[in-house]
Amino acid sequence: MICSTDKIIKYKVGLLNLAEELGNVSKACKVIGLLRDTFYHYKLAVEEGGVDALFDQTRRKPNLKNRVNERTENVVVSYAIDFPAHGQHRTSNELCKQGIFVSGSGVRSIWVRHQLANFKDRLKP
Image (cartoon, rainbow, N blue to C red; front, side, top):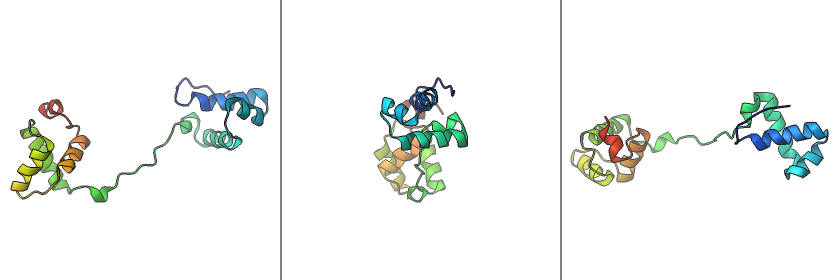
């Protein structure tokens, strides 16, 4: 019997345990309302990686091609710390005057990556 108290995977573990108790995968799947294919997918995941393998794995990978270069990112971060009250579009305009071209949404993305998304966060450093 597999045991897990985590709410995220509790129903997955419940399906595996029910099938073990009933001794019949088809009945367990009908009771829970899932396909047998799903049961075998969960079973294989547990056999290969243990109970932790039942957590949903994200497939998203960051697209680094869309990011600005490191120098620009450092300038945006330092500007945010120096002028925390400036918004993303004003920051973009002020940096444009200095010859650094980054959009307002680009500034916002950099702030989010560096945990500077709101005024209070920019005041801390």
